[in-house]
Image (cartoon, rainbow, N blue to C red; front, side, top):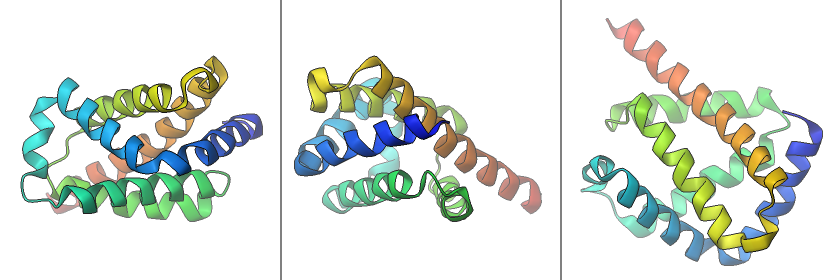
Length: 142
């Protein structure tokens, strides 16, 4: 991930923040459409609260993407918690696809190929770190 990637992610995120509620709504709608098997994982959730948590997590990732010393422990903890909720490795691909689709819809023409590549790189770091931590937790428990 380059400094340019990080700059692009930060600048596009700044454009998402004013429409954050719509973005969260779009994201979960798309996620449940492309991966209906994940919807039961949210059965006991307050979706308004869940949407807020999504935006907070994305904001943390964006704000700390340049500082892996801060970001990685946060993501590892998040990955372990998501494993406890029943999230599986394959769910991360659907989340990534829903995120990219949502950003494209929310930002329109401002979501350029460079923005897509930059967000894909950041999400790759996020998802791989979370999966690794979850898988280590499972291995350590065995």
